[in-house]
Length: 469
Image (cartoon, rainbow, N blue to C red):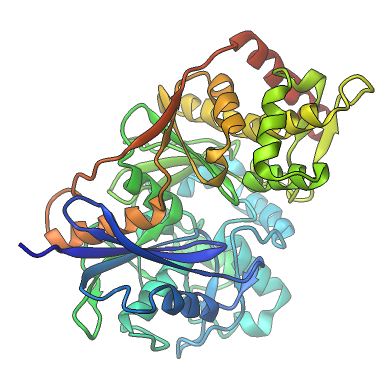
């Protein structure tokens, strides 16, 4: 019996990764990778070039179905001929801070936005970037015929076999729910909000069903609707009830699958949809793994040595607390903030304590997200820790204490790409539910010193409130 192959694409901030999987078991058969420019505004053509490079040398040979998981929120604005009018403003581009404030007040404040689309405006969301385009480059804004998200754009290029424009732009409700003009609870676009941002209504992608076949390539390969990167990761991990994911990559995310849309006027938890028809309440931070990279650079050590130093320090880092807002911050909404090291004294000024404070500060921000999920009705009995920083022994040890629940680390894998591949397999099968693919747990850590963790989190919160309110 011949093996049926599917492919998933992870078009992230930093790179394009393609994984080819066995459609029945999910086993990764082969993979490819190519980098993206390190910027917050990028010509989408670079994504297509990376896709072609990652898929070179016959990587997609024999693949029957493909889907794309992509970085959320990025604004790809095109004219009537499908020509990209402006570098795509990515999720981590914070130039729309003023526009975010304006939009929030124009609809009547945070609660009005939560009632409308389940989200409080933040600089990451697509609509704020469209408002920035309207206000700062009106001659470009006037030419916008269609606006799509990064995964939509790449899906369209795959459907068009590299051409500039497919017959129709498509998206899924998961990625659409991060735009500020699509409601995950009603599953409808809010064109009035699109008009509020851009000044008029433009074309938006059709929202496909979770396992819909949205087209075929010229070679006959089935194309699934794709989804956002966090939704792809949830699908790739087979996220279940009582579980939350903490992802430590370029950004940090905390999310769970739920049947009930959250309603958080504080803006900490976003009311996203998932890739299966349910909800995906999610918190996102701008600062995660790169906090550790910055600390290692300051100490002139490699990341492995940073972890060793952190584990050599006592919990609480001798009173040092790091607010890890090195690139500004999305949650809490402090786009202009910088990092702060509090509690420094002659007695705690050691490499070990600084390393520990970096790990604890990064995780304290995400522990706030775990608490916020609980407050929105999502029980968290176990955390799945993924992303590059999850490989750090210090991160694993500290995480269980700060989250207060067991922390499981799945075997290293490209879970966004695997989730996209699982969606492709679902579309290929025509079944009512995605295929069951096994997940391997590499390590599990139980929570330990609850008293020390509580003291650390109180000190971290006091520093944040004292500096930022």
